[in-house]
Image (cartoon, rainbow, N blue to C red; front, side):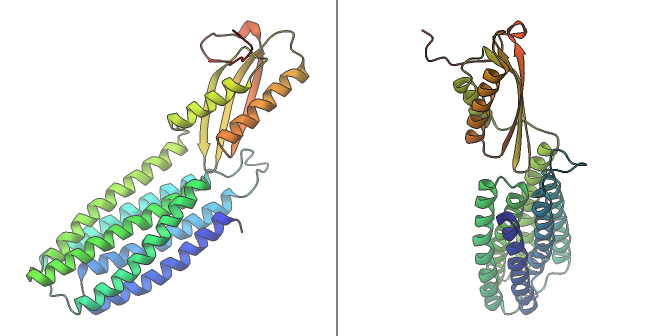
Length: 300
């Protein structure tokens, strides 16, 4: 199992531990907010399972039926996690509504808060690790799972605040009120995860800073060519696919053109790790004068 797979498996274990702590906290207090918090953790387990499946599938090499590899499995997983986050928010809204209709006194609040704090601390540490490692490994599934857990951290913090206010003021409806506000925050997180995943599935271009890094890598390493044009970039999981046309002088040999392409490919892979580059070489009568101009240090 690769590093991403081990992290996804770790999420399942952490999620199971956190769920047990939160269920105990809810059992002690009877708080609708803590019940909602525990309910969201059930979905955390489901999303961690989806992330584990996705990173294991995405790591498989290309085969006859998937010649570009299985990288988009991570995007599908991220979209599923986004749906689960939205589902969690809907269930929390439902429980908050019931809490407004039939408010109840919170029992053993401080024991419940102590358990909730332990669970929240565990989630916060693990979510931060997942988000950082997900970005480093270019894993959409791990990043989405980390964002889901971080939404759970926000949920737990809001729940704890609601319980404290409800106990101090004696206003029972503050418990479901905070659950309602937290649910709205989770809806926003779910929308962001869904938007990013759907953008990848629709082959959205990379952020502009990464696109500029690719253009610069081409311009600085294409000596011997005239220009590059029709640059297209898409990302699928950890892989970034780059293709463009490279215009070379008509007298350039196949061997020389190949050397130029190798130099460009190495530069792009250094700038954007995980890149898979395809270059279509064209003669100079195909120049468009609108693409990427080659930087020539010997040119005055």
